[in-house]
Amino acid sequence: MDKVFKALADASRRRLLDQLFLKNGQTLTELCDHLDMSRQSVTKHLGILEEANLIVVEWQGRSKRHYLNAAPIGEIYDRWIGKFERHRVAALQELKRTLEEENNG
Image (cartoon, rainbow, N blue to C red; front, side, top):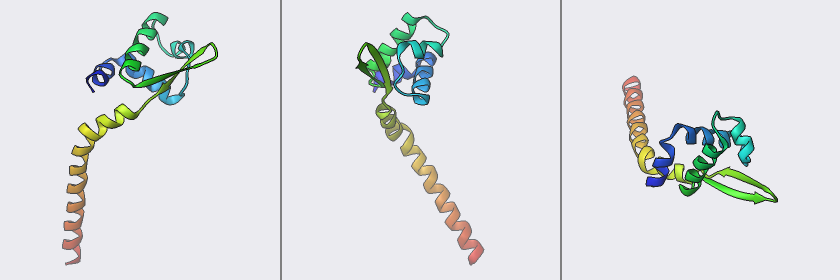
């Protein structure tokens, strides 16, 4: 999970993931069109994202396509975000029940 957090810490890598979210399966050239950085920089960032398992690469003939893998982000959500959100939702549900009881009783 450390590799995922490290990969997500960089704004350029988050922009690459955003681009893949909008249109999955892009080539390096397509991804470079959306960013103001050199091809070499994009390649380096893609390597870090691939190492963190946030993207999957597939060769289609001579084209190398990059696909978003949202599973690690889902694991972060489950471990670090979802458990806190559940408590907030439960508190809101309890508040709603209390207000309904007061209004009906």
